[in-house]
Length: 320
Image (cartoon, rainbow, N blue to C red; front, top):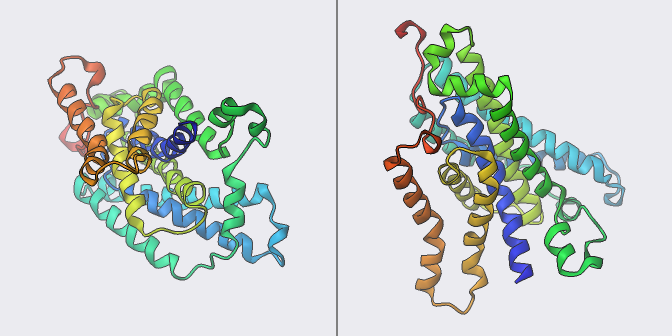
């Protein structure tokens, strides 16, 4: 059971990166359905960074744990942030439809990641993956408690820290207030001097960069550096968007929601003796729960469980 919980918590970190990044984006009024493609780009960006770093070494044993984490992390942020810039350019500057643009980015991110995977050198990825797996070497001395709380890599704790910081910024700072104002009523925000275009650009780029880390995490922590076809990473992206709804657009709740989805995601594998139709039903639970929550938020009169009022709507200043 402890092993199942630890595997579920590890999986939840990929969801948490994706959902936190998307919450930041949606709070500004942008509905970025390109998150699956962003996570694919984050994964291949990290793989590219690791490949470049390893190619500079004369011997694989010379790997520096610090650089093996830092360089893939920076490249992952760069690749996924580029997707945010591209999305913002199309939707803010060129006023393209947000839904169509997001779906196009998913296709582009998946395809480009598949292409780039064929040309990078992946020798040494197993060694890099080992660095991501454990942060605290003493966890095995604490029994089940150590395994449950201290047996993870650095990115698990980073995902939680990012979600907490995002919650504080959105709810306790002027920056968060301005961001939420743009998402609720961009015309009013513009009238009081908030630069709507800049706010949406920054929130989308930062949100995409954070979401892309979910792809990097999945590659090195869950796949041990072995590149999967992009389908699994895309599914993490779609579920991350679902978690945003499940969390009613609150980063603090998304920590709990991601763990729930991590448990549900791993549950079919844990129940190896169950019938195939039972496994299929268990695999569908995250999607079913999301639909139930969406129905609840739709019929609820509480503003606290509603999405930003301008979500998915482009803002044209001349129409104000």
